[in-house]
Image (cartoon, rainbow, N blue to C red; front, side):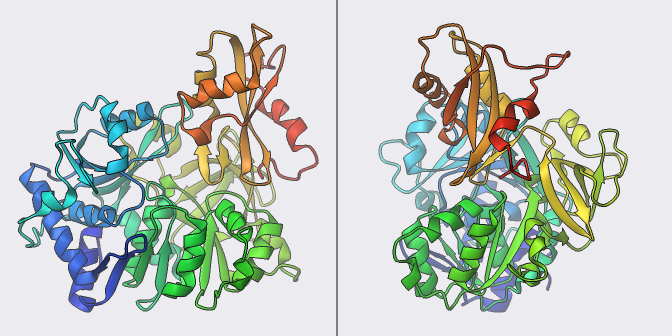
Length: 519
């Protein structure tokens, strides 16, 4: 029996390894075997069906990392429903927009986010279930919701091309876009994109990145797909990560570069036993060679870099362990993000869409079975991103050399800070709401800690306006990680004849002397 959809995943492993540990929630010690995980997923499916949830209906999740997410995901998949994991770091209006735009019918929410829920006006959600203590909210808890529900597998037909995930990514217009990913997208990514990691049924997989990210939920499903035991952490808790690796015998994990850098700074890390570690994957933002080399020396295991987007179901290029050779003959490859994975092609194009030869910088385009189905309820954005012949335009600029992809810059203005994608247009819109700001531009500037950080460049109508006042104005309206960390003042922000801000010119002074315009 093979796994062809996410709905198959728990039922196949239940048949083959029902008593093996599938999932452990490190924060409170709860565990699920593959048999237990499948049985509870069946209960979720039947509870959803009793509410009228059917094929391709959206079911939303809003909480930090919790094991209930995976039960909910697989239960929803068994009904051919689509999971929508909401970024809990967003401001309340942003969460509200995603829940309404996705047309979610049910919301599974963590107790700590009930105050945020009270400030939302949800237009399609008809049922709310709480993870943890529902308090006086009047909503059922997850356990109450499933109490007495039949555990029979509903066996609803699911097609590989049906959507199963909808993750939201910030848009250049300031509004998030819902990326529709299919079962076929995921099954390819689980079986092919990270095959070099050599994950086996006896592996132990650490999952600590946020589940609203493809590097969190996607990575969690990778481990479960391979039938191994996964250790889930509620959050990126540095001391707990370092404790969990030796105690649970972790063999595989994934980190964004910022987390790697923070771990290396934890006092006492040199005394931690990392002998169980076999593989660390990193990606989502660029990494400095100094951090990478120190991490390789500290963790003493195989390292792989993955490059991809939410729109490509995660990794579409991998720089494998054999290409991590600091100080050696292949050291230059550390600046690459690897070669395309199986069944995928890359090309570099100019502004007119013409393919460029090796070594010339242009926009990176991807063709392959992991490319998204499209943007939910946004045909124009889909058409702007995916060509008629199936090439997905990434918005990143780079070049190819001897089959390896090198990231050079970004075609779009996106800033990547600590692995989070941030679009300046969204922040500029908020800045321009301030009555004392007459013009504004937002750029990414180098940060040793985060790779990049957000800088606002502002033309003010009142000299009394302070940097702190500008930042506080943003904090009231945006998620904290999107807010400027510094503000510069400018009499006139440079624009081209059509009025577009000259971001390249604004960035130059801050990136001077650096070979790449990303950190």
